[in-house]
Image 1 (tube, rainbow, N blue to C red):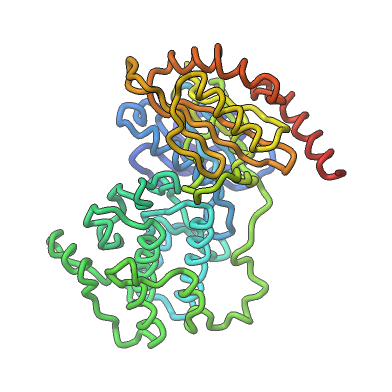
Image 2: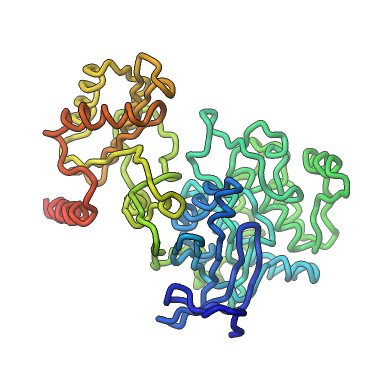
Length: 461
């Protein structure tokens, strides 16, 4: 491994840094090796000051949040995140084969190779969507290959979580690379993240088999016109099954564009399926990433992990493993960027039924003269009658079912003055909830032990 100039080469006594693999807007990616396990990894080194100055904190937080949510054999795995006062380090799976783009740049791929990569890409994207994650920048430059030439989707910096949707259920941020972006994204009128990713996968499939992009023009407006009309021609060597599939994936109307489920049913996609039963496609890894902050205290938080919009119901939503893990102290990202964190949310666990918790929250709202603006799926939105220093105070209380005998409740300020919220929480809400609270989230170790005991009791009951 070639050493870097003028450095000790060992990062936080854990990783020996080597050659430069690539360079992006906010930092560089190096090859590295664990001094403990000797495992090869890739380390993305990000300059924290640069991120803060350019207003890209949310961009970095989103990438960490998404990468720890998505565990799939065809997605680059995030092993660990470390931070010092000046740098953030992403320790990721090392893809020895490099970018798929470099392979395609040499010319079109054989049909069986393109077929393999396309299957793996669709399976990875499908898994991301099942976790409420939309990549939004799928292109060969963001697809890597491992030493066994298996595809690995990377670069989730532009990805969106399900909670990025507005009330119309659509995403509204225009992003992605022009040649691969869906027409509805260009129009800036809101779009379905899943449908936009399917379009990009279609462009990638075309590129793999043709060796060039379907939409190309030196004039950007002309390029957009071609994309809006889905004006492309398949080369004569494309199999008929591929041509039919591409016309369905590159449908300019997102409402009639083919879904991933339908793609998987296509005969060309399923070709040779019986021969591949032994492959890892679609499976989960058991390894879990860890997050370590070596110079700053991390508080508890789950920014970027709000649940998707839910159907109107009085029943609280069950928490899956991803959501429970995200609430632990070690997974909060705020400490990477902020020295003093003002808490906006408070959490407590309760052994009372959801109906009792909701009833008590309604009583508190009545006493505090807060109106209930919404009541759905265990979510209560409370709003003040008068405008404060920073607008009308709004408080969200959301109930999650951890087990049938245990609920976790998150109370947080969604609008208004933080000091006013803190005062009401401390002097009114917490005392009024005293007899139904099992434990307020604070001491992580104490709560973890209590949760473990409760789950053991539940399993025996």
